[in-house]
Image (cartoon, rainbow, N blue to C red; front, side, top):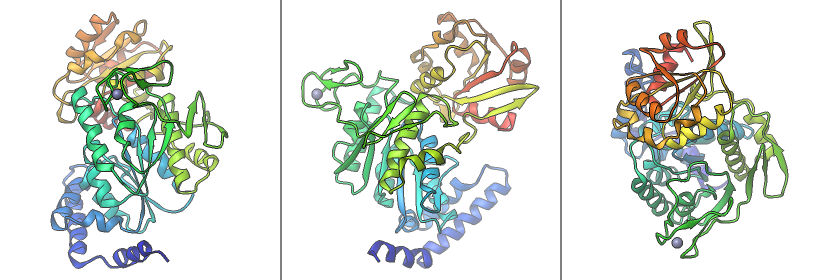
Length: 420
Ligand SMILES: [Zn+2]
């Protein structure tokens, strides 16, 4: 038996006393918080536990085979797909509810102590720290682009932080060869599996992270005009509706229940990660077909006699991917935008999104910042109506299923309201 397995039985079988107290205190706090109606309580519980034992996350993941997943977009969905694929090998613990900072991750690992595998979504800012504590076997890096709160400079700094944090990691890094910032971020890792997963939003990757020169993009390939930084050769490819594995085997992704190109890319990456653990890609893809909705995203619900498809779009790249999903249709679209804490209070990002793609469709606008969105749509030449709340908008919508696209807190509010 390997030393890591021995360490696992020591620690999981009997955590040190301080860690046991921390786990218990975290659970009590979590339960109290839940009882008080303040969400799942996981984050507050994890925070209390980590304060009592700062090493708790390391202890709770010691000896487990861990996967970390980070990105600007798609990390919750990809975490879920990888978890499903790895269940072919055994029990998997995961922070499935999307609490992706150290406290939420610690709570999820304390909740499920016995699973031999752990698939963990990690907020971009915490990736190096969580990698140092969990010593993962694989790390999936999907994409990096500006988020609500960020501009291009912060995105560049994030890539540098990943690059420094992952230098010399023992993990197999599974990274998107089509995102230059991700390629830069993975550049000092010793073992990288490249995936041609595509990049729909390219506005944050026009200059070379290595020298500042101009990146040239003739077709899917890219390279720096001034230095040797260029697209690495991918082992895995997303090609239309199928993935191609390193042996050239094509596997259809048409039976995936999650829609759109972005999700086929997530599935391709998930299959590449599962292969690190010896799960064959056919098995991985078949298991992923069981995933229908992820934390309400892509969920179809009946509400006030209408059919609603729920879509989350948190940032410009996310809006672009979502428009790809609903493009070419004529049914109504309901948009909701907030600017609360988790959304970023500045709505200037609305101007980075190409809303002209909604022209010709009936558009209904709600949300705390509906007037900001209305101004943006007017400039984009989109016909729209503004409503006080979701009920009024749904009742006013012309016939047909309604595509609902909302940013972060707006999505959470909608989900609660319509029961998804
Ligand atoms: Zn360069």
